[in-house]
Length: 114
Length: 107
Image 1 (cartoon, rainbow over the protein chains, first blue to last red):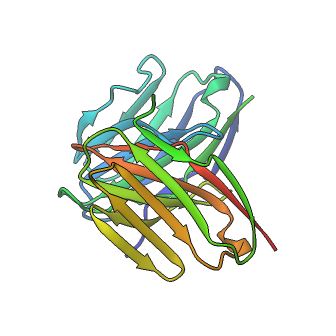
Image 2: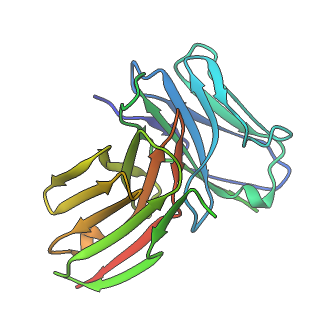
């Protein structure tokens, strides 16, 4: 089966600009996650969707970050305006419904804010 | 204290050595994942386990639920095994990640 697709792979923007990332999960995977991974650290959950509903966005900096999954399939993550500390890899993952189903990860988008 | 702790944070070894990476967690879990991340950033799932032991090629993962501890072993290590290895635990719904172990295998 096709994996989790993310784009772009790399993005460089200036601070205060806006940026958007796109994720296409594996077909049939109702659960979708966005993670932020700062260099040298483990991934941190930003938001979790179940179909098109938000399950957990407690660690999403809502003043500048937003995410949507309007039709319960693709998802976009937006940062507006970006700060230097937003430089990180943004990972998307998806999995089928169920207690012990495996999560599959995309290649990530490496964002550099200058 | 982090919910998921890995050790060591960095590990350098010679080709052929037996490698062990440890993961301890403090929360109740339904499953534990071992993940491999290469420099490009992409993550590959190596194992998902909730009890006992799993083996895939030169990789072995074990988990002790009572002790809340898991280990990832690599036998006959090779330079291509160089990567960051991440332990992640699943509680009710979400995955919580360790900080990763950077493994470098020198030829």
